[in-house]
Image (cartoon, rainbow, N blue to C red; front, side, top):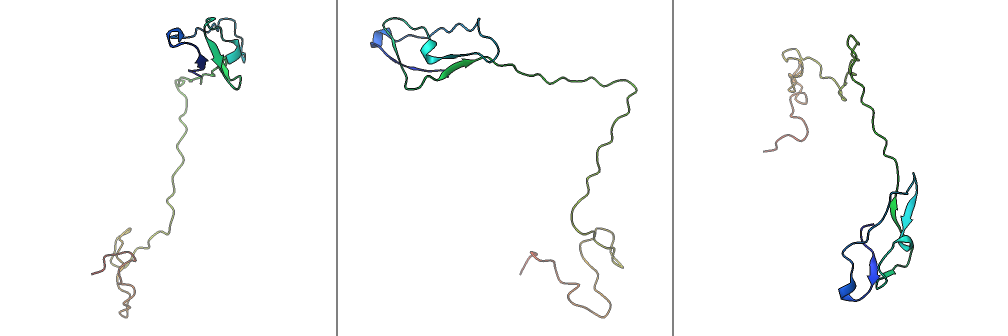
Length: 117
């Protein structure tokens, strides 16, 4: 929390409220009612919110690579979907299928979503 409401004269509004956290232990906290303000200032709050909490930040340990260590291979990524079969005249991965023997017109039709003119 960075701001609190106070009741006072405009000339008595404090620029800041100093909070001493030097005696806080792990998981200790300071609430609004514990703040020390000048006598001319009254703290205005409905709930006694936490202002400060002391916690521990866990740091990730970075391990340096060891000389002579075997590197772990990355897993192979396998694409989803059917593999296209090699046509009589087409190369592998060629998207256009060759017409089937006997003149089947469906085999030579463009794929769905193609240009319609």
